[in-house]
Length: 113
Length: 113
Image (cartoon, rainbow over all chains, first blue to last red):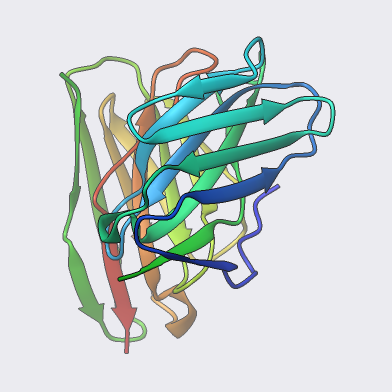
């Protein structure tokens, strides 16, 4: 379910390093997963998605890994830049559930120059 | 291409005053529409969703209501605002199919004083 009442955990990384943001999900019937990036004062923006028939998907500087065995999703950002500073949300969708996404609580990424 | 418009961007309202936030989608038909609220430094809380004109589902009992008078128009309202209604309100749309992500609007920052 949605973790709306919790303060966001924070990940602090040095500019140029790789970042890994993790997300655990509980619904074994979920078969579609998305990562969103939300900059301060803006709406969440789609970054990358992955379907359950895949373990890994790569985009530009981002990689999403899916481990269905332990119900774990991660977002890897290569060569993190100051512009990557934002809150990152994972979301999952259960097949045949009417396209209702369940969002994780979010992780704040802070990039140190 | 599809676009989502949400306004106003910021709003300061006194306690007890009414509220009306509007969201419209262009470039698609029969979208699913969603209203989310986000408290400062917190996650996304689903308030309402709609799968069609006049069809509103409420996720959280509260001081707010939603309406969908037209296919691509979604309105969030309140008759009398409370201090606790302050927050960042986000509208989103998705296609009415499984495994399709949401596209969020730019959000409305509401401060009730």
